[in-house]
Image (cartoon, rainbow, N blue to C red):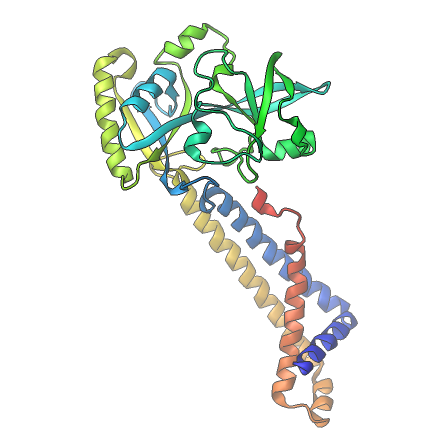
Length: 360
């Protein structure tokens, strides 16, 4: 073990003596590792990392498709309540709608990226607040009722410096008084994974350009992205079959708005960022991951070639060390130790990147 540390100390002394070689090797390794770190972090955020909620594998995303409305995936409020009441394959359904609002607090007004959510949004996800409380299932069932706001954790840290006293604070949302009741947990940025939501409000606080009553009753006024939690033991195919029956029933009951509607059920992790039948994102992620791996392999190959050239330059040094009694294994170990030191220094930029790309 003592000789190993001696090799490391010797490596630290010899590398600065060849600044050109050291700089080229470190830059090559750093670029190769940076490409892999960045690509993996994006793939992890988009596809691999599960939602930080209770039982993330049970969460699915629902879509609507209609012949006369291609590309539409949202639900209207009456449609959502009908499916929520009739779908027996799910523990519950919930929804969200991302929008931009203006928030004024402490004499400062700014844009506020917020999710308008169903009252049961947090209870179905099964998450606990970082401070205060979350929106309750009994709140926000009627237009204008319960003007409460839950802050996103990152926004709470940035805008209010993580002050727990913000709970109970009165703010203005587009000029409407509202109360901050809590803060979402750390690591939870909403269920639309490419946007870090700054806050969450009940759908009852939605401002409407037209008739408010129409919004709550018009089956063709589709705004909400619906998700659901599967009951234990229920598969996606079984849930899909049950929703198809409900969709046919509603099409007969409301032919003007629901005729030709089909419902899609997608596991949440395979519905990022948008649910599609032939989602190209996983294949694109695989291709980019392979390309990043090839870049790293090429970087290692180039550094290996430079190391071999450096070995030939150091032949005289190795001959002297062998004459003084150093064995072949010890000489090989010295080169391996120096290569390890180079790799560690090449990885330092990735390790020291604050937050890293995983916070994408």
